[in-house]
Image (tube, rainbow, N blue to C red; front, side, top):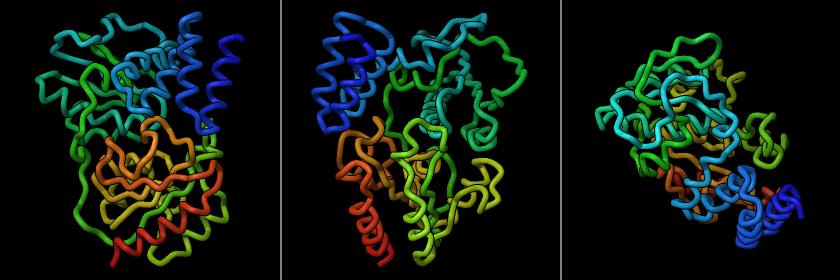
Length: 303
């Protein structure tokens, strides 16, 4: 069996609800072919199952890091003592919002942090207090003691149960909703709601769409300001869910099964965002049990 076949077999076992078998397959292959591909997929399953120490170590073999051109004149941060640190973006908008929690922690240690990010996140993440710049186009990068990809920070700093780290307003009224993610994301077909369910939820009382084409938001800071005035957010697994969590805004998160690594293997809570409540499919592709549960929870929240 090739490593490609083994990874596909592991993924198939996971889809069938056998994550332990998936991990076992990848461990056996890793002993014979210790490649970045196998390490990355094993890290994914380990992190979802709560095996943080080994998972974060193997997470360093993710494609975003392995394939990154090493063109900077200063070294990658591996946890050594530094006075200044350049934090670089990776993966999607939600990943960057999630890992941005470490910027205030680094600054509290006396490290001068400079943050590079995607253009739609620049205004939003500027609230963290570090100089924040767009990573698109020609950029001038001043010398730092070291650089680091944001996705490496959990291993180097330690996973933090941080309080809200982006500003919001308490209370609010109305329900913000987003039922689809980026269609180019590999798992979007599974994580996004079908159009008929999106239309149904938008017909519920006080529910408004948070899609930028409906709100007029030009970037995530505009969306943050809209969310800050809401009572609760309903979202599938997309960047808006991370934004609501980073603000400490109540969020009902609707998840396909199996869920992404960051949401854990089960349960209705997530260690990353205390204000979240998770609603999981019991059968892959079937939202019929999720939507009524969300509707009932909304009724309970609002009395």
